[in-house]
Image (cartoon, rainbow, N blue to C red):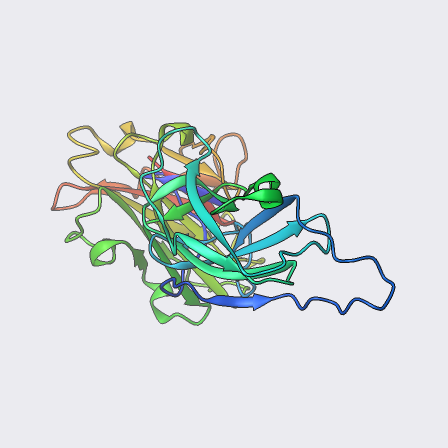
Length: 323
């Protein structure tokens, strides 16, 4: 998968507004007569996820927009450990970068049922930020419960916009935009993208998203990261490529000719945009001088009547990108 910010994105989606709903709980096993009692917990393990089963390509474990729900799975350790009674757990936010987390979780606390070793909860995060982590800890510790070590999830990005669409989406042939005003000249986005897939794709669904540009990603300050996620299969080739048009606002990409701007991409589900999209060797051909099957077609790239720079990225695999 790859991504851009005036670089190019990859695929993803977000779904329902979060609420403090217990989605599922593990069923505590009955303890046979004479068996050892169920151990009390000494620690908490936490994992965040979204259901990405219909997407293909490089899909992140969590594909979610701010305010939309993801699943938080809480497991007590050691294996099989349970609380004797329902126990309130607090959820606190941090960023992997060490910067201050600007958002909060809803709900801010959950209740782990007594007698259950693992449970799932629906949670949302309020801000568009990269590298978000959830730390789960006992809210009111006393006695032995004070010795339960908190657990923290792996970091994940919380996006501004996630659009999920079927392989049969009719607008893919002419251009499917992501962002305000669908990334037309009327958009207020600093950067956004329009995806053109005339041959469709192989997975059941695809995803387009917009995320925050942060210094650790290597993108231009003020830009956004466009991500496209789907399994393209063998539908595209260098001479018959897929297209992502990155719209960079006249305020962000001001004055200079379009060839002075570069797109930064990544084919991984997360992390920095560590590859620069080189110029295509020929108009309409996804091939650069090094033989890579992704490139920026500066012949087709141009400024529109609104003054925005439209940078044309040709590719044969999904990705993330930005300027």
